[in-house]
Image 1 (cartoon, rainbow, N blue to C red):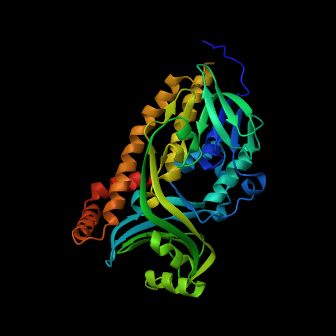
Image 2 (image 1 turned 60 degrees about the vertical axis):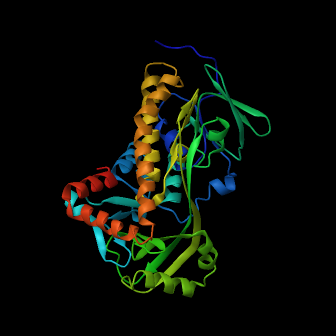
Image 3 (image 1 turned 180 degrees about the vertical axis):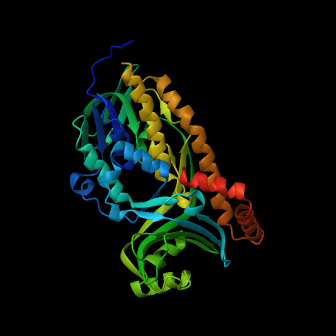
Length: 396
């Protein structure tokens, strides 16, 4: 049955023009729906697509979703790096747990793409569709909801009406707070320092996660003899590392990897990101839903972040498409509740599980160190566990 509703400016308003918000807009590109993306950045910032240091490890499922959106083809193939192996190292030991794409008969465990290239591809795809608009330089002051619509109030007293409002404005979402949705937040009191490094020897498409005592270092294999190095350090160490000369920094990173990749040299800038995870206690409200990091912002150690965001928006977009095909109200609470039921239990499991892994493998106490090694050895030598972890990491 077709439902007659009050006229609105847009069917869907998405607050936040990051990868998750843009993905959701792109998922609805072929629907007869008017969609507006509100982005606080000014055009000169939003449209520059500068590298920000972040490399996104995409699962096979995520690549499939991007292909279905028609976005994957907008990412240059020369900028996509395949992860064929992954190894986990604890303390001063050699690799205690390893994964290989050969065991799954896949071409890769996953695919590395720079965050800014994903966003650029999404924007380029969206620009091909007249039903999607991006409005930049916007600050959302409030969202006022009624039974059949919502009113988004911008700074400057501009009002925009919609059937459904989506918050995709980061893990520090101001709209989530304004909607009165509580969240669980975990501050790890640590910071990620990311740098792109060139090196003389091949990384053999192998990703490394090294839980050293006192800090964690990860290596993501990029195209050619280059890698993204991610150091997790305490907040007190940040200034000294950022302030290092290039020569000192290069020497430190080379030594951390024991010279296995030859001399390593920094390319570009060092980027700094705080390590804070968040999980909203509910993902929905009347005429309102959370997606991406606004719903759940993960610790990056298991590389679930954007993959989880893609999966969540894909679930919600699928429900909206089904509702729209029947001529029904896309913003009904029953539709949003279905999205939450399908997604929130999975995210809770991953969120608390990941935080537990981080707590164990960054705990350098006398009692924790042997437990860390036992956990890795059991996973390595018990094939069903290893297969389960591999399937979970690759989503294949």
